[in-house]
Amino acid sequence: MKSFITYLTEKKDALGHGSDSKSDKLTHIHHAEDRPIFHGFSGFEHAHGALTHAHEHMKAGHHNTNLTMKYDGSPSVVFGHHPKTKKFFVASKSAFNKDPKLNYSHEDIQKNHGHAPGLVAKLGAALEHLPKVAPKSGVYQGDLMHSHGDVEHDKKSGTAKFTPNTITYTAKGEEAKKAAASKVGVVVHQKYEHSGGSKELHDMGATPHPDMHNFKQHADVHLKSAEHDTSKVNYSEKDQKEFHGHMASAKKIHDTHGGSMYAAMHPEHKGEGGHMGTYINATVRNDETPSASGFQSHITGQYEKQAAKLKSEKGQAGKRAAGAEQVAHVEKNKEHYDNLFKMHGHLQKAKNVLVKNLNQHTGGFEHHIDGNKTDPEGFVINHEHEGKTEPTKLVNRKEFSRANLLKIKKWNQGS
Image (tube, rainbow, N blue to C red):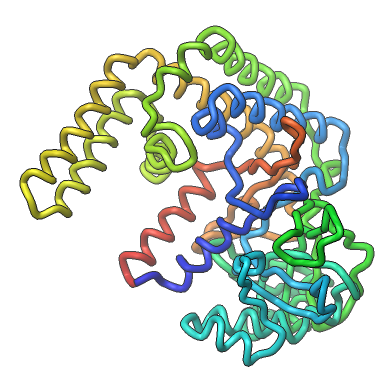
């Protein structure tokens, strides 16, 4: 059975910042360095372009929705006025299904989500209070940061704390007063628009540039934009040189070995659901450096787990044989796999240089995980590639992603 924390985290991952391609809905946001593993040549070009875009954005000190801060809110909520009915609604990720679960009333929320009491409470708070600030038209998406009973207000120190998911946020001064006085907190990061004459919700596409100037202010809603002000970041020449060094090393591997390196990947290893992706997450959890030999051990372990679930010896043997075939494939192409992991490492290190500098400005909050001071969850760069603007996340995986993955594992074991 899934815990409520895991349930919300999965919903958040599926509903992160989205694309402004008018035919797309919000999907899982990829780490920059993972894109070549998922999509080969195109993935590398996207990753390289996105990281360069973020670098140039920081150098110029821009402050707009091309680069935003990731807020560790939960759940992600779609809200606004339905383009056909004009009625205000709130919803989870099912908003854009052919048969969407839209909530116009508290009765709707109970009917659609009664199996998850925590989600019912959050959506109820959103339904009651977000109409007080939302524009009279338009559909938006944001992360809920807090609702009734979530904010710890210490008037003596002038702070307000809330923990929507993994990170505890601490506001001070006027921001703390706003959070404490509000009934719900939300960070808005998306707007949905139609590209044609359709009035159907499922025909809308996401843009990462919500018109925040059209939102109203109300004491009951602690409203924030996800925009990140990079004019408050001191991006040193030394760090820029380090960024360029790792980018050049990654591109050299791509240019020199890409033709054979990507082709050498086993079909079961690449793509967004392939074994490479699960292996990378495992190395984050275990604080290991990815390598071909480590990947071989991971594959063996995965297929042993699958074999253990089967009752027949024939089925078990089949699973182990499939794993052995893939391990042999990696062994035969070990140099290509190691080059791929080296390139992945350079992209990750280049990204970490950006994140380290972006962390200088924390959006007005202090951040803690389990009582220990930390940085923001990360950032999102919205970069156009092959005619489509798509988000890429910039997260220090050693810090935040590992903490989040371990927290999910802990809740699963206890549920």
